[in-house]
Amino acid sequence: MAMPAEISIVDTLIGFPKEGFSQYDFIRKQTKDKASRESEFPVEYMFKDVPKELPTADPVSVTLHEMDRFGIEVGLIGVGDEISRLALKNHPDRFVPSGTLRDPNDVTGSVRKIRQDHEEYGIRALGAFPAGTFPQVAIDDPKMYPIYQTCVDLGIPVFCTAGIAGPRVKSDVQKVSRIDTVMFDFPELVFVTRHGCEPWEQLAVKLMTKWPNLYYSTTAFAPKYYPQAIIDYANTRGADKIIYGGYFPMGLSLERIFTDMPHVPFKDEVWPKFLGGNARRLLGLGA
Picture 1 (cartoon, rainbow, N blue to C red):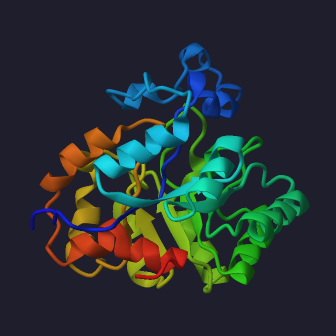
Picture 2 (picture 1 turned 180 degrees about the vertical axis):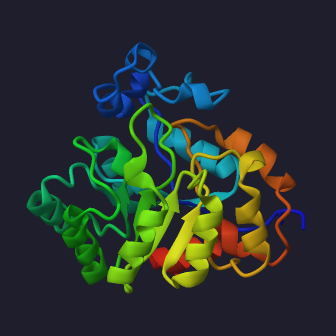
């Protein structure tokens, strides 16, 4: 049950160090409490040892160095900034492009942007954060339906945050129960949850058992805090459904993640699928 040493790891949520956690500006603008508005990292209360002091002169090299330290062969990154686009251009063997759903309130604009990113960058996934939209748009909101259909048409999965939001914004839009309706209406859609699904992780397991194209990624969780229901599911019926995702450098260091990782009690046959095989299948990366 120990984590094998030689596995080609795919990280389904990784990025590059930036000055001042500027990637969270959109959250700070939406929060109302003083602590969130004044914090560089609006969910810092949930994390310890946040990697704040990383050099930013050559952010791509920093991330590649950390990936090499811990055996991560491929990382899924956004295409929305110059650093990411440079990484994709210079290291196409190490980074895989993902689109980001910025404002589903603009349905037409969102669909056009997904198609544009697919044509220009070859995105292999779309990331969504319902609680981070403003005004908020729920997982099962009709505004999301043209976006889901576009992903189906392009053959790319949606990686969507589900469960109680970390930032101090409303979380109703991310209730796991909402996914049931989406999977019913879009049986061809590949839907991967992000950020834990808590406190509805047991419901997430029930829904994954029910819906063939529903998956769970472990993003934003240090391995010591992986929900027991998810570990049990991976070790029984769900080995093909649980996908590794990190949170570097947004909230967790890879050192923190992979110091914890060997203590996760996955069965031997689960590790290769969890750390790389399942992600490769969903992202079309081959063996």
